[in-house]
Image (cartoon, rainbow, N blue to C red; front, side):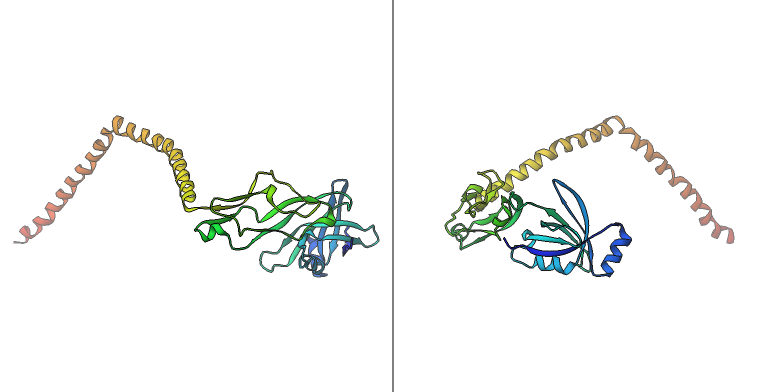
Length: 253
């Protein structure tokens, strides 16, 4: 099996200052780890990772990490981070693997064809855009596709029905739905059931809110009336204050 080589350098120090120095030297910090080995701090050129991501397999490309003054090992690019503004690569994680042991990866899942159920007015639902699979590193497929041409209204496709390459096993229950064609009736029933469930959940909350309101009306109903008296009494000083103002013209006469 031909592996894509990525050159790396062992790091002896870590931290933000080290990362900034690496990036100024057109390198980024990375780490390689596995189930049977300790984490190995590395630095790699971001361009080499962009070349990996540009391949047909993308992050599922099996790599050979060539460590300067160290041992080479096979790995997968299991994670990486971009800068939120510049979109430059900031960090990478490599998973050490064995070429003779199965690996767990996620591969793209696509459909093709003019679906009968969609022509009849239904809606095609693709439940999984990526499929979790297990296989040997040299058996990792680029993607899995499914022809939905014959899929009719209310039809569905289970995980067991997918055409997988030899040596590739899907990590889903056999009857797990991965594709479905939903009719307008089914969609309306689903929305109605969701609305009913929301209403049932809101009913106890509404009842709990109504009880304090009833107590306030029955037990403390007189308090608002008593509180209104000062407001009514407040008019008297205003009227009394108005009388001297009206009497001033009489004194002028």
